[in-house]
Image (cartoon, rainbow, N blue to C red; front, side):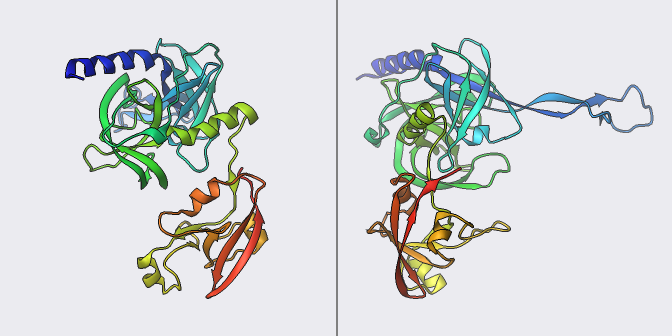
Length: 345
């Protein structure tokens, strides 16, 4: 394919999918600011906060999303709609403003679902993210920096199945993202939540993060991780994920030497750095089964946590209500514990 034909394919793809991409406006009620410069000659400040409790609606952010069901279901990033006390407005490609409700925030992945009261919307076709190949051309469409709707970026897939830690929102805590797609597509705060597309116009990922200080490195959540969320919403009205109730870190040779541990693989049950953190959550399936802090989980249902095998990945392959068996090491002594996975709320 020559460059002219390649450009034509991209142009046609953008025209095809643009109606499915939306802007998300985030607003909050903030204390009213009033101009006092004309009323107080001696006041050195030009503005003051109103002291009568008055508030005004202020736009505090923006992002992108895309329609995945004609009856008003919209997919975006969890961090785009993380504010519990904010109001969300969806602006469609034809400039309709629709109030939006956050239906769910995925507890594992950077995925959220919004609902607007509308029917017959142009839903984007979802592709298969397992079919992506290194070097494949991809397109990102979004609401760049919350100001420029339908901004288009082109690039290639430069990495698959990446694991990153990133702060996904202003002042937000670090989140660990597994299995993400790395591209050289320009991703920023505004087009976060928008689709990453193949040349057939199918959404194959959700744009989510850029590593600050690095050039041309963006990350996207594979669309296949969102498909189960969409099906859960359509069937049950909520996202259903299995819950075990413990904190952990995956071990390595370096961790074994640092903590003087008996093995160099598995999941070490330990609390994180946050105040009041617990390694095992009270009344959780892990607590009921007798899992304790500093246990090392070496296998789930006989599958060893070695090599690239991650505890979270094996857990998410299970379903709510499944009984699972954990192989653990406790002070060098092996144990087997059985527990029943509950629904994460």
